[in-house]
Image 1 (cartoon, one colour):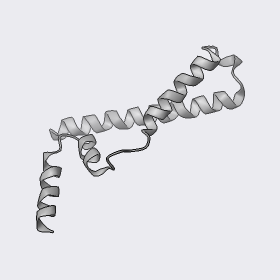
Image 2 (spheres, rainbow, N blue to C red):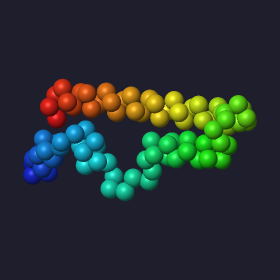
Image 3 (tube, one colour):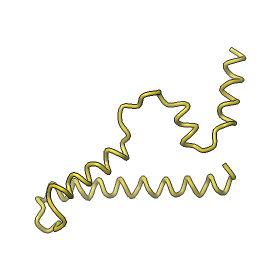
Length: 90
């Protein structure tokens, strides 16, 4: 048990970023990346309905706005994380 704890501590200390640390602790084969799926859906909606959002059905526009807000939230969190890592020297 002590060797496992020592290895875990060494892995944590050796992680270059939070993403690297999370990838060590996450399952080897994650099923889906929610951010990637969100971006894919935004692109699919744009391709299917075109650039003129005034002509989109209201439920599609609502879905599109939801996914755009999720994408923006994720991007803001990622930018904040990068700033934190840069500040901490990770």
